[in-house]
Length: 249
Image (cartoon, rainbow, N blue to C red; front, side, top):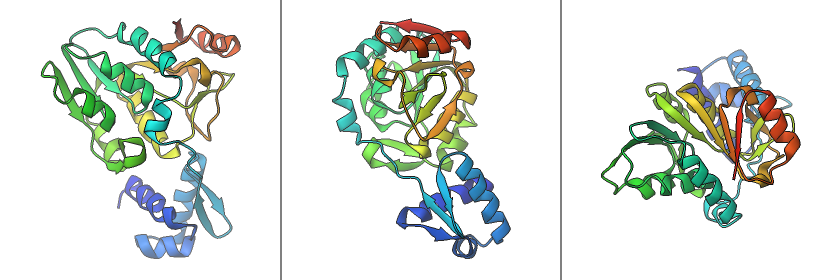
């Protein structure tokens, strides 16, 4: 069994509550030493927390998609409009999950583009547009946030290449570190960054600065950041110092 498959099964098993190393070892058919190494990796990624003799999931604090979409809609639409202006016809664009990236998708109708995504909201938005070639990444359906997750999603990302990634986040720390509250999305976001030539972060001003339990990437992994004009100036300065172009709207 591949390491990533074990990690996915471990996280899936922990949804019902904490599990011991011995229990995980028996379920997955591997040695306790292998499980301990897996738990160490997943703990380092912020996807679980190790407890005495085993592990437990980190609480997921994300709100359902519809609730998040109803917050700061005007600000997200302004960011999306500025972002859409960066996208050129003929490009292959990787769209992350999230409500701001969904707003970007709404502005891509009629464009000659290839769009790759794990977002079911983006799929619903662009599915009937004949000018957009739509590629869906596989995975396990996460119904509350209308997306696909898991090792299948990550495996699919290793098979594609994008000119531009439109990346979402739940927060940007004052030092420019990009973080997220949903740990299961973090490995997927990292795989998206690896699959793209350019990374464009879209985040409204409420996420400057922001918080999250898991680190996605550093500011030096970003090429462009699109946000509102009232975004925290200290955080914006840290992003610029790291080499990212910060566009405000």
